[in-house]
Image (cartoon, rainbow, N blue to C red; front, top):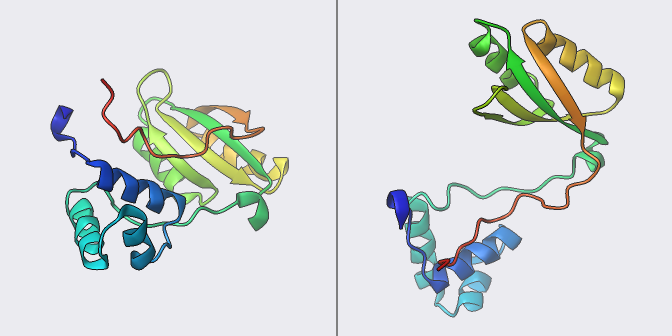
Amino acid sequence: MANGAAKLDGIDQAMLEALAANARISLKELAQMVGLSSPSAAERLRRLEERGVVTGFTIDLDPAAMGYPLQAIVRVRPLPGQLHIVERIIQEIPEFIECDKVTGDDCFIARLVVRSMGELDGILDRVAERAETNTSMIKSSPVRRRLPPLGSRS
């Protein structure tokens, strides 16, 4: 249990796996899946939320089905003195659907969804006034966002 990480038992792990597969599962179904009563499952889930293990429940959208057939990973290196301005620009452009501030040569690695290459150019032009960018188009995502390993690895 490094850095104060939450210790998860088998029931906690099973609950998290079930919720990751379907965040809309009913409490009754969740309880049945992990072998608890509904009140016990609700209490466990509440404790996972209090400990910060579960921070929210969400949906997984398909950008292509919403009219955004193209996705790109954009590495962004702000020009000197432009870091905070570039960060704000990225936050204000809704087509940036994810962004991480990272170490290394680039300061940000972001995921961008667009309808066309022309739209991509327009968005990157807004950033390029204050930063260097390097863009890679996403062909497929063989590993989608998933849970980290939940069991102890010895």
